[in-house]
Amino acid sequence: MEEKSEQLHQNIAHLSDLLHSGQDEAFVTSFNALHDFEMGQVYSGLPEQLRAVAWRLLDNETLATVFDNIDVDDEDIDDLLQEMPPQKAVQILRNMYADNEVDLLQEMPTRLVATYLSLMPKDEAEDIRKLINYEEQTAGSLMSIEYLAVEADLRVDEVMRLVKQQALEAEAINYVYVLDKQERLVGVISLRDLLTHPDDMLVSEITKDRIISVKAGDDQQDVAQIVADYNFISIPVTDDIVDVIDEEAVEDYSGLAAVNVSQTDDTAWHSAIKRIPWLI
Image 1 (cartoon, one colour):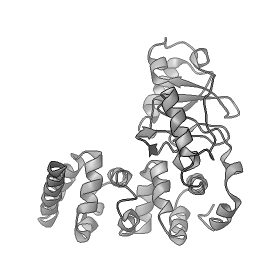
Image 2 (cartoon, rainbow, N blue to C red):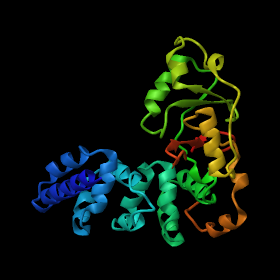
Image 3 (cartoon, rainbow, N blue to C red):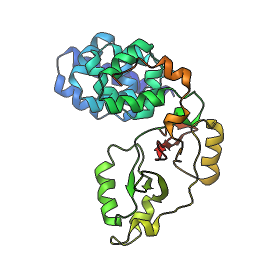
Image 4 (cartoon, helix red, strand yellow):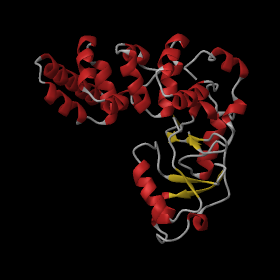
C-alpha cells in the first residue's frame, strides 16, 4: 500500500510540474498513459488551480474515464464536476457509463441535476431520470443502459459485426441479448457462442431461451447471490421501468430535464426497459 501511495504522489507531482511549466502536450501524453484507475486518483489529487488547466486539455472521453474511476463515497466528486461549466460537465456525464453517471447525479442537489439533464438530449435525459429514482440497495439502482441487443433473425457474422461496432459503447460485451420485434427479451447468447458457431448460422439457432432474470425492486444482495449461484457476469432486469418508479420520486424529479451493471462484490451487471436487458 505504501508503494502505491508513493507512486500516486510521484504521478501527481510529475503531472503538476508539466502543467506548471506549460508542457501541455507532455501532460496529455503522460496522463493518457496512466491506468484508468490511476487517472481518477491523480486527477482528484491535483490542486484545484491545476485541475482548471487539466480539464481544458483532456478530451471528454478521457475525463469520463476519470469520473468513472472516482469513488463517489470517497471523494467530493460532484464538487469536481462543478469546477467546470455545465455544458462541459454534461459532455463528461454523457460519456460515462450510465450506472456511474446515475451514482454521481444522485450525490448532487436536485436543482443541479435538473440543470444537467436539461442540457442533455431528451431521450438520454429520460433514461437517466428513470434510473435516478430507484432506491439504493436494489437491482434498479445498479442498472446500466449500455448493453448489446440484437434481433433473432440475424446471422452470427452480422451479430459479430455489431458487437465490434458497439463494443466501445457497451459496459460489458460478455453477453448479447436477443429481442423479438416488440423489443421483448427472448434469450441470450454468450460471446463464446458467437465465436464457436458458423458465420451463416442464425442467432435464433444458438439462443438460450431459458432466461434467468431479476426485478428492479429486488434487493441487491439477493441479486448478487443469483449471479454467484449461476456464475453469471451480468443478469437482465425484466421489469418495465416506467411501471416500477416510485410515485413520490417521480414527483420529486418532475421538474428535471426538458423531459446499469454498477458493481457489487466486484461483479459487473446490467438491466432492461420494456423487458429489454439493461445490465447491473
